[in-house]
Image (tube, rainbow, N blue to C red; front, side, top):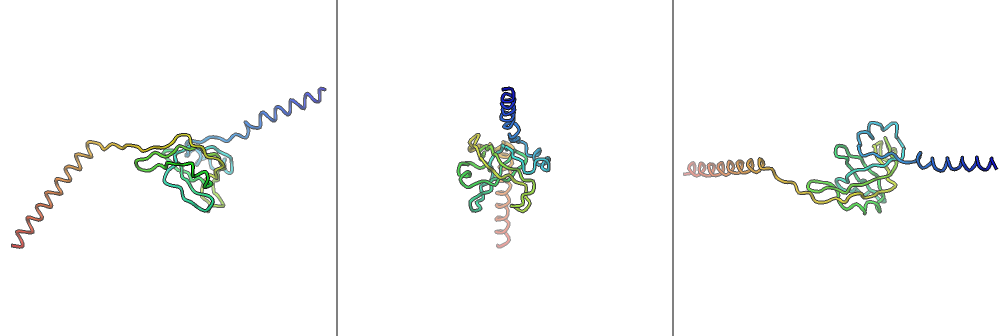
Length: 166
């Protein structure tokens, strides 16, 4: 009976501690990921970032770049998963905020030694949208002044060339 009880306790300890040990570390600051690349090479990680640019199809897989606001990371992702990403960040648009689970490669042999992540799952946390970028008053004033200067120069040039041709 005691032997069975000890075995059950040991199994419970293993079962309940295993998921904790196997949880992927989550990164939303890519600088930390890049600086600790040697330590976490080939590790399972979770990455959060905004989808930027556009997806680049390469057969059954595609490249998708995600950004944390200061750095970008290439994600190797199945084409079926890419279809769920509707908005990519670019001027005037905020891309979908993604949560990527996958394997971090400091120098991926499959992709010419580049740092990348091979995604196993993709989740859209927040849908992207169009962003209105206001034009500052200073830019409006400068544009008006430059337009007036240009029109003055064009008028002067035409007047000057007419007087020479006579």
